[in-house]
Length: 194
Image 1 (cartoon, rainbow, N blue to C red):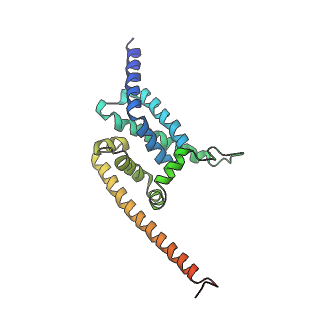
Image 2 (tube, rainbow, N blue to C red; image 1 turned 180 degrees about the vertical axis):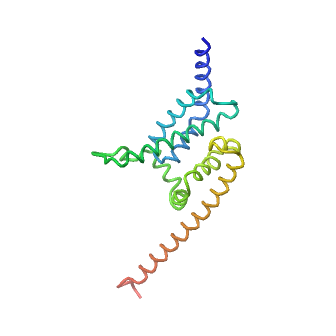
Image 3 (cartoon, rainbow, N blue to C red; image 1 turned 90 degrees about the horizontal axis):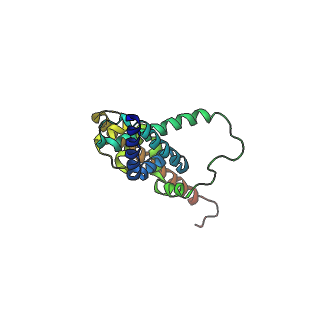
């Protein structure tokens, strides 16, 4: 009887988490994976895992960070699995050949130099930036989501911000170089009126 009651309590608790945090977990996974359909599937998986792991949550007030940690691990597991499967050639049309509306909207929001700069920094730092800056996790929530101490989370976030600054500077320099090359090419074309 106690086991059934615990499962019922876990179900009610996770349903509440789902209602409160589903959209932000989905948005985090979309940004991390850059595939809205996969993010939707993994968001569901994260809440199923949260239900199964309800007993591992020590304090209810840490539930949001705990949920981000579960979602992060689910995404990493999927990325690792895909790296292995990628070695096997696909036949026929690939999944997601036509981008969804969510993907197009996401590409617009993270297009250009910022997207390329984020791609240049290590995955753990990118995750810390997304969790702290986009999803507004507190320092303690970030630490719990990354599975590290508060001090380590601050250090990761500090390194991430510096890495992003350097990557953005590299992107800006590359854009200026490309623009200068375009200008010189168009300025030196034969027949270009002088």
